[in-house]
Image (cartoon, rainbow over the protein chains, first blue to last red):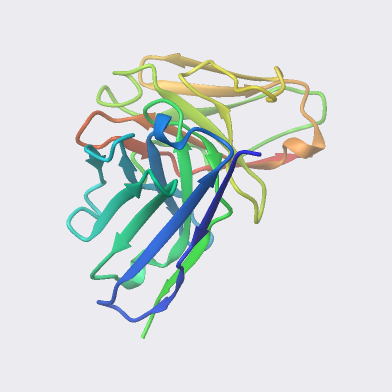
Length: 118
Length: 111
């Protein structure tokens, strides 16, 4: 079964850091770009980051560039999202997803909740 | 404010057809044939319904179809069913400086 399982979410104070993990199984991880999305409570989907198959290419929207870093460990079939300098507006459910083509994601994890609050 | 514009709501009766629009610009929707549509039921994970403007992933009913004209993409759902009631989001490739852009979502109600 193709599966993505996120972990690492939690409550953090503004300015703090969190590292999310996403464990993949059931498919050839090294053949797929991977990405992160987020969804604030009651709001829409927002793309957060994208990483190439070998980790050499990454992309971010301006809203997180310089604060978030996506990486992957192909030996462990895991993708990570290091989030620094967290802001209240980063509060959301974070989804890991398998990239299909450019903007599309065909497999999604269940999400992990990040709450930034003092 | 989302980069792509969707109507906040849409509705239709069972059996009818409904079309949801997604308007971008010449830098995203109009420039590339990389537009996707996602369905999301409350509390659930998004599901990819359409990619590359018109392509349906395996398992998606052929009642769902996508199209594009200029800077506007559209999702059409024919033969509406109660289970189609959900939020629908469009996305587009926005070039290498803004790789993925989303619409704000459309809440579809099946009357």
